[in-house]
Image (cartoon, rainbow, N blue to C red; front, side):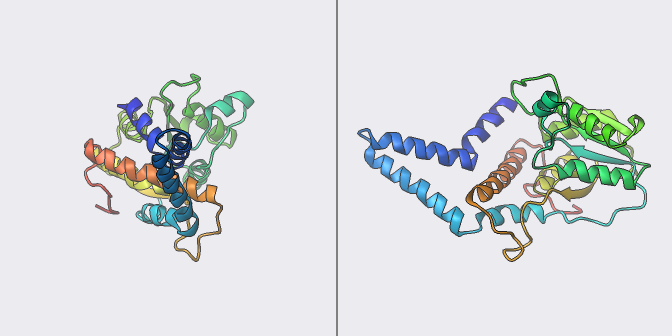
Length: 264
C-alpha cells in the first residue's frame, strides 16, 4: 500500500502531470494521433494560463492552512511532537550539517517551543519516506543532530525512526510514548498538513493541541505575496497532496471525517 500510494502521487502530482501531458501531446503531434496531441497541448496551455491568471494556489491551500488556528498555549506542556518531512537525510549525511528543507519551520518552531517549555519532552517522528531508501540514515538521525547542536539535552529527546508516512508517525509514536489521560501534547507540523494529522491522532484516540507552522499563503489575496509560476505550482502540489491524502485516508478508515474540525 505504501509503494502504491507513492506511485499514485507520482502520476497525479499537478506539476508532473502537466509535464507528462506536454510530453505526450508533443509525441502525438508527430504521429497519426496529431489531433489528440493538439487537444492535449491545448489542455496543458489552459492549465498554465489558469495558474498564472487565477490564485488557484490560494484557493487550494488557504482552507487547509486556516482550518486549525494557532491557539494560546497552556502554562505546562508534557510533550512536543514534531512530524517528519522537514529534513534532508542525504544532504545531511553528505556534508555533516543538519540540512532542512522548505518545511524548516517544523524544526525551528519546535526548538523555540522546547526552549520556552523546558519541562516538555521533545519528540521527533520520522524514518524514511522513500520506497527504496538510498541510505540507512533516517530523518530522526538528522533531528537528533539538529536539536543536540542547538542545546537540547538527550534526556528530553524522544526519537521515532520507523515511520514512513503520517499515519505511521502517529501510530508508532503512540506505541513508543504511551500517552496518559490528562497529559498535554503539542503537535507541530505544517499548517496544510495539520487537518490530516489531527484526524489521525483522533482516530487513534490521542488528544493533541495543534500548533500549525510553515504557512505558505497569505490570509487573502491582498496579503499573499506576488509569485512566479513555479512558486504557485509548488504550492498547488503541496495542497493537492493534502486534499488527496485526506480523501485516501478517509476511504481507508485512517480518519473519521474527510476534513476534521477544530475541537471535534
